[in-house]
Image 1: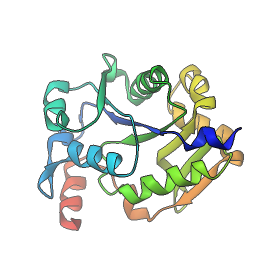
Image 2: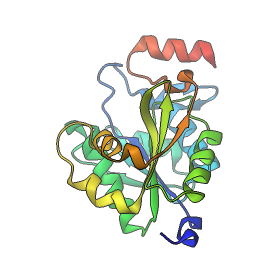
Image 3: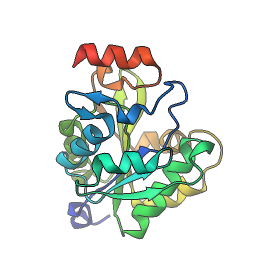
Image 4: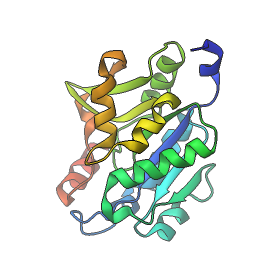
Length: 202
């Protein structure tokens, strides 16, 4: 794999299409430190060096887009968002493949403690290696962000069942670069108690 190919832009896929059913309201519109959850995620992804950045929207897409329309990102609508996160992942992969991306990092919009420094470190590790995959490790738990080389895009699209991304990670883990992160960065927003916990920590 030519080294110079890895010096080009790394795309970002920010998954932001879910219904927030367990939260009761659209969690991406909640405010943290003076900005919405989705804007925080987009801003950090951009600051980390992801370009182009594709935000996959679904539930209340118009409201979500208004939060970020002034930022340098693109969006894709997933009409099948009620079928779960796999449909959004595939919509994102198809989108960045159409942008001729050489690699893509997949992030979740509801992980507010993922920082731009984490993102930049994963990009740097990808560029200095030949691994097809750079994965995050939270004390033994593998979760987003995950960075996939374009050589894995077709595999991601062909995976069936729950956890397409996890299936690909499991299949290629022996070849992957692994970056450890604090367990605190794994915090997501699923239920009201999560949001209360995050607000106390910010």
